[in-house]
Length: 541
Image 1 (cartoon, helix red, strand yellow):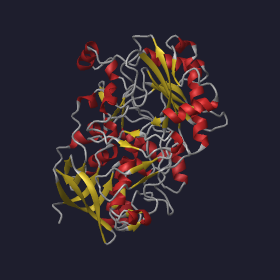
Image 2 (tube, one colour; image 1 turned 45 degrees about the vertical axis):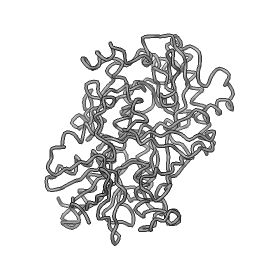
Image 3 (cartoon, one colour; image 1 turned 180 degrees about the vertical axis):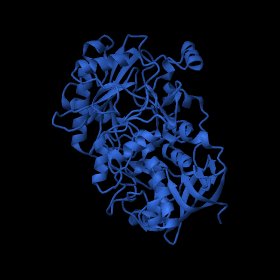
Image 4 (cartoon, one colour; image 1 turned 90 degrees about the horizontal axis):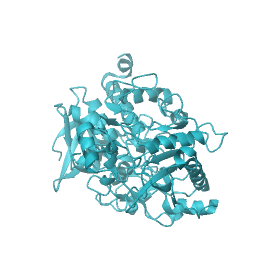
């Protein structure tokens, strides 16, 4: 028995869910219930940009771990995922990167109409309030604040100059005319503070009478009756509740939790569901498959510099600077600088990304040396070949799913990351950065051959926090949703988050996830209009 009915139930108040809650309730006649498993985002460290590693393994984190990775020394790799209002936009490094235009054109080539770069650029611009001002590539009237960094460290500027000395072009806007080159990242901040999707989209509209947002509400099942999603069940305050959706249920729970919830609800590979005693509602063998993620491999150096780094951030002066002026070290997103380069001159687009941190950043910033200061250059292969899978651990919705990204299963992935380490070393050796660089901590001076560097890759790599693809958009048996994000085989059920990406974009994934949700809101409104008025009336509105 349902407790109440809404037009739409949106599952997950992360980057995508906050967008949909805002956009759908602009129509005062449309009611939306937004359900978030985590608690409100009132932890101070969410606001302080440089403090994001302090959120790992706290109540604001799902704290997932992968299955032992065969090609990574048998390690179970830690996967932080946001569990609070704003989701991962509340605990990420705030880097605003869209990816390469060809990524979206490729989605369209796969049969996904309307997902090419020209169309998606409109959604990026709609979302954006770009500090330097609007242009053909940037919006200035959107809710999400995207800015230049307030107080980047001198070492980050030195990294950019060093990379230029190594032969890479300077690029002050990775989301502009070209992605290739090196520079400082734009960040999702406002007045020196994190500007999450909750800050941008949700909090300004929480007083709308047609929007209800619940925290501490973990959805355990989508109820499906006669081939239609009719609502959800969720646990809150120790009890189980049920709620109905007159129009649609929209999953915005991310690349781990959206496929997990589909499988718990009987949508998935029938053999896998039956193995765990889950009744099959819809056969959809692609659910949970096609998992893709970016990997970090860091080259790390000691430094004697005591001004340009962040390792001692948090002192009294830093705290005063941030609270009073919203400037200084605590405004840092840690991954301040970076770039996009081609490891093969014949490539048409970058295949390698750098993230430079003016600090030690080893094992997510959780295992840094107790003393001293460091500099870290992370190399990331932008389009890994390896594919993994999310599966059920059991039919208990409170049991974490099994996550097997199958990292480094393809030799090309290792080779590109080895090349990334070599290029990081080349940049570190250039004059502008060499004055900061001391002893090489990772991989260490003894790792010179490709095989020795590859061993470092396997032993020390970790996620860049960009899982996608587990509810793939497209045609064919492997596709979970169509190009309007509707779950195949179930009416009234949609997925709108990073899980629908058919292929991983060449860059950070928060901005693309927000753009996906912006487009999803349009698709939902269009489909509702067509359903109510018929295709001819809808087309002439």
